[in-house]
Image (cartoon, rainbow, N blue to C red; front, side):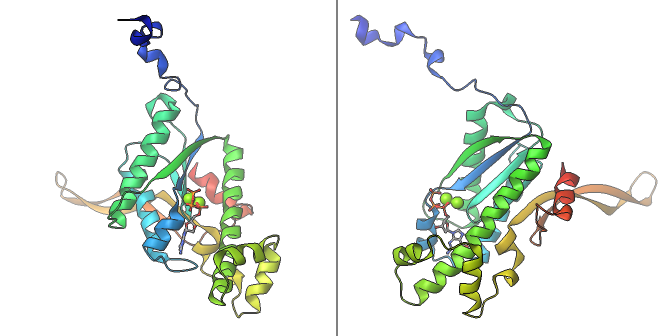
Length: 252
Ligand code: DGT
Ligand code: MG
Ligand code: MG
């Protein structure tokens, strides 16, 4: 056998796994985003501008990530086709490739089940290094994106309903800021400040302490036990305002 045919003899195979040891320290967010979900939305006929069944399915994915994935993120924030997972401790010794790939593949299979999908779907994943302070800023940043996405989705839908193609609608809206979009929809009878909160501000999925009545078979008494339950909050404050900041801090 020639030297070039042996090839790998020069560099041991395990050394070719260039990124497998790349690791992060907590706290971090892992952000997942649906791959080409414009196509999924078209194929599955998602309601426009917002489909509460799709949002419910994304919340089901968040719940599964918190409860069943074994990775134990502290909470999840979701809007549109994205999910941000907050980790105060990292699984897999913080190894980025492993965290990203397991989060994304777990989310994809959970969403496929939730939507009863007949074709595979995928998420991409990235890690975002934060500090506790930067975590609050990060969530405010994603929530601003949720608001922009919300205004854009309503305006796009309105213009397309009036006869524009999606390309024409996108170019008509280019450079129109949120106030302009607000006025555009107001003149069509929709107040963008009064649409459902989950459409404007996204949804938080977190654990909350609850007290449950239990029965102690040894003493025969009814006792109160503290449990942690997963809660889906569709009525969020602004993460840039004091009550939103307090809510996030209470989770961390
Ligand atoms: P990507 O992320 O670069 O692979 O490509 P996309 O197509 O996933 O683009 P992205 O993530 O910027 O936008 C999310 C898409 O998902 C966008 O086309 C609208 C769609 N989508 C998300 N939520 C809803 C919904 O509630 N209703 C409808 N009709 N579409 C939605
Ligand atoms: Mg996407
Ligand atoms: Mg997206």
